[in-house]
Amino acid sequence: MPLPQPDDLTSLVLRTDFRDEGAWDSARAAVDAAGEYCFATYVSDLRFAHVGVHALIAEETAADEDDQIGEVFLADAITMNDPDHPLLAVDLSNEPGRTFRVPARWFPDVSANLSIANIDFAEFADVADGSGTFRGFDEG
Image (cartoon, rainbow, N blue to C red; front, side, top):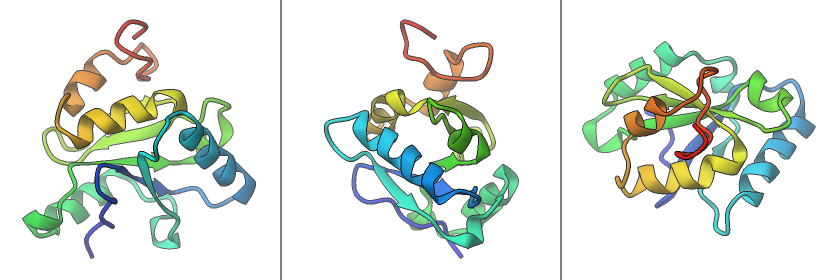
């Protein structure tokens, strides 16, 4: 089964941690508040509970080329428990399995640039700090 398709010019945010509905609501609110427009297509489906990066890569690889999405953002336990709500960005195409964290405040910049192919995944990942978190090009 292919991964869900994000809405036009948005990025797919998959919920993988289902322990706290309030934390999920808080993470979505933080992402939505970070930008003027909605940059996320949220999916809260129990089939993605605790899904791993390798399983997502396998699912994406098996999908028809027209159904492949390139990258996905995971709302995992770290996202839910950290006040900055850092999503886990996962490359599914160019360097499958490469990841970095992106706090909610930076999500609109990352999502917008990836969705229009203005900046590629590696450029964001390359400037992630020592913790593997993207904090902007000037602060990274």
